[in-house]
Length: 115
Length: 109
Image 1 (cartoon, rainbow over the protein chains, first blue to last red):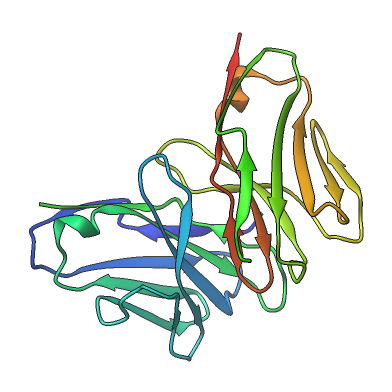
Image 2: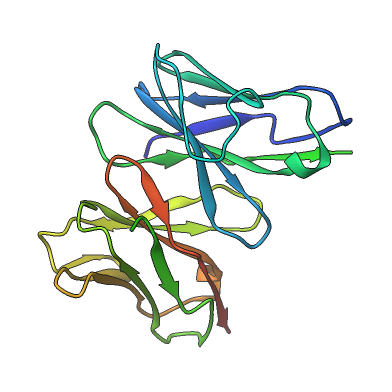
């Protein structure tokens, strides 16, 4: 199956700093990538959809200036959490889809802890 | 209309038994219904998926049953094993995924 990687797997930062999370599709070209947020023992909530070379589309209630998404190539998307605060602590998961295919493959997730 | 309702919230099954998880949706525009398995601290992994023009799909021990008129679909895990213990999410998609609330499955040896 298709492989999606995320880096870092775990990050701890101080309040007020910015954190960048990378999502890569290793063996396919991801025309569409998605970013999700998951709280402990809860479901995945879609934050935004990004298409290569276009601006990301954010879900209602997600601050686009807080969560900056860049999808500069067909294999890489980045999520930057700007001026992070403790309430931003969560499990962030990306996923990727190839072309018009429906299957969506998920990365292993990044655990963000903001002190 | 975007909501996907999943039940039960948790499920305990003996080894060798059948695990059944149910989901219901409202939006008839959904055209793809996957099930994901997630272990603690890991990303979800696609198990099996179905489209609304099919009533059943089987892959190994996993079967999806789909009832289009009732807007319901379910996952059956046959011969459940302790290694199947995980959280299972149903989802529905029309361009982007909407997830159910998740079911924590525990399979006792």
